[in-house]
Length: 202
Length: 202
DNA sequence: GTCTATAGGACGATAGAC
DNA sequence: GTCTATCGTCCTATAGAC
Image: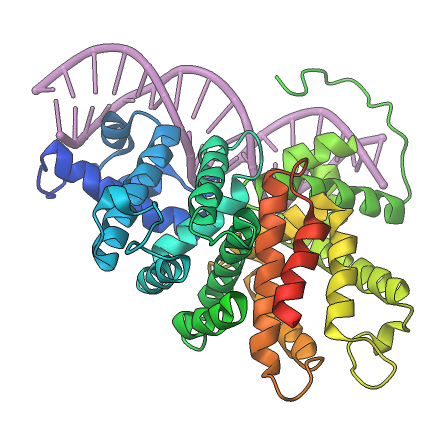
């Protein structure tokens, strides 16, 4: 009973680039709700004012839609983080005097995430789903974890072991985000992180 | 092409209780692979040597099968933890002189979890999926988080805020478990936890 | 760039025989 | 306790018109 009418749609006919942006945005929301296995192309198409074949014309397949969503997020996050820290985007992940420190990067990350629960949920759900080796995002998340551990670990000053600290930082952020998402009105993500960072970095 | 043969199955006809145990075990493994939305009753039935109606005869519906799996885990976990700590099961979550401390409970939990990656994955996947309000395990996980925060928080000695520490402990454990599951051969969960606990509890 | 139409399955669940 | 048979719905994807 979802689309009983075979009538003409009155949605505007969008240019391809804009349509693609809309599709990615809608998909992001729906994956956050249901995960990738729970995502249906029919629902994406409905929310975009398209038919399913119309949707597939733009994205090719369900799997490649997922990849598009993830790549789009990575670019947007890097841009936002760089601007928030006032560093050029290619200097984001390098240490050195006058550049960013690990606590700074973390604080910026948490503050950005606190403003976009939907995206955080997308990653939380996919991070768990993609543990299965045959998940279409399995390789993506494996590479991502490796990259994050290396780059964050490089920001840790020598006495401590960079990878260990990075691992704890990432674990703590991921875990606190889940708790926040389960109870967004009561749980203050930024405050929780700051308290945790005090313990972790002291 | 999954079950081409309409021939008679040669599987034994099991007593109901035993069949139920088998179903729960198989389902646990499959949910860990695919999540609840990716779980198909057909797959469960196949792995049990049953048809789908035969499976539904035992569990009623897909939703109630999920609930059965979760309840079964909670009971088994409580039993194991109590025996590992040498406390009667009703004293597991109470503080006091001579009883368990938070670091002890955590160490025991991590050591148990390190031996059953499948179960840990089940919870990791469902924890994320069930953030959506209409997920069949949403209420279960909400209640679970509340219960854990309260009981763990009560183990924290007064100067510190129990709920804050509990929140950090849970976040860290959940996060480290994800990293472990993504790379079980290289990542040492117990060692990672012990290192993190040193920082957190010092 | 979007449509209609349809292929070709998989899904959860029910009815009723044995 | 398990089966066969079947219902109605949903799914991804393709072919081809406009």
